[in-house]
Amino acid sequence: MKLELMKVIVKSVSWGDRTEILKDGTLKVNKKELLEHVSDEENLKSIDAEIALPGESVRITPVKDAIQPRYKVEGGGQVFPGMVSDVESVGEGKTIVLEGAAVITCGRIVGFQEGIVDMSGKGAEYTPFSKTCNVVLVFEPKEGIEVYAYEKACRLAGLKAAMYLAKCVHEAGVTPDKTETFEIPPFARSMKEFPGLPKVAYLYMLQTQGLLHDTYVYGVDAKRILPTIIHPNETMDGAIVSGNCVSACDKNSTYVHQNNPVIRSLYERHGKDINFVGVIITNENVTLADKRRSSSFAVKIAKMFGVDGVVISEEGFGNPDADLIMNCRRAEKAGVKTVLITDEYAGRDGASQSLADAAQEADAVVTAGNANMIIDLSPMEKVIGFTEYVNVIAGGFDGSLKPDGSIEVELQAITGATCELGFNKLGAETW
Image (cartoon, rainbow, N blue to C red; front, side, top):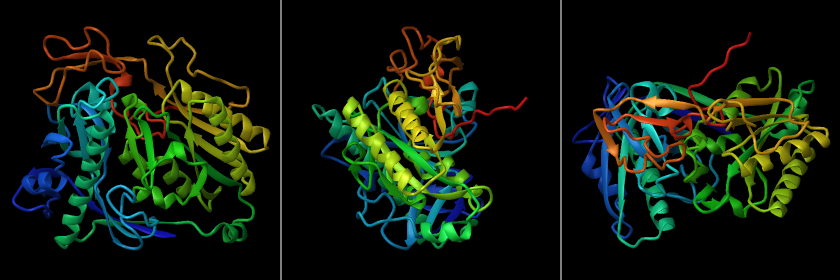
């Protein structure tokens, strides 16, 4: 499978009479047409749209999801299969990408499980979405609507908006600024091409604990699946979509799934010092029997491919830590080396146990940071959304929202701050 990402660089966003990209990199958006395209009169009382640009004194909260605008112009299927397009397999052909732009969805869905994005100030240093040019959809539900229907309506509206923006830019006849190509050979051929390199797979854990802790694969709730194989390119066409209302810091937004840095890093090393053989997706369950079933199945797939090692990434914390460690222990006992990617909840002083579970086999672990660290956010001139949940948001507490509009919260409240795929703004030093 060969996929070409045709990237159009977006440097700014503003409202206009037509949705198109200007020569200076400004994405013009017809607001009326956008809102008509994503309207849902059955479930939503209102949808509004705002613009938030890097460096502005703007706060967005409570943030639900972030999506990168993409549209397939050649090849099988269409982006976000099973959601806003047909369920045909994706991951090959050509896809338009609006690089530097994002659709942010914002609304009181669960409230305490949504996050904060600051476009400037201290908070902007911890979220990757302070550097994207954002079209923000703000939702108000109809009275009496069930929260599941509300979440679905917001999720679909965000995906429709992202697809609409990229489609309009393509239809306006834009020339991409650059093209990236992603291709790995079939497994049998790769064994012949790279006989001396260690075979590495990616074990991709998806949040599926239910109660709005959901991830979708081709439109299917991933807690209903057994672990399976997907081509890494499929993630880039939106085959995996976030439906999560979990802690903002380590929620894998749809944007993150589209730009999974673990997959990109494995691609970069493929044929050099590793043979990247593919992606195994698995779920994070709540019962011990389901955890055992999925962990056993995932490791069985890795063994069938004869891999030497797996990179395992987690989503969430607490209960999913048990899945992470179980996957690690089973793989190591099967002779498959592991590297784990997670984050920590080590207390505000960093002195507490970082994970809810541990094992001696987990001796190669990458951390994305301590989500309990306290951060002070300065007041912003403009707030998009609603601030009433700040005191109860995950990472907040009584008194987090100050009278002057400043906020004191744990890093847990910042969208993407400790992303366990490494899609964040934290770094590390070797010494």
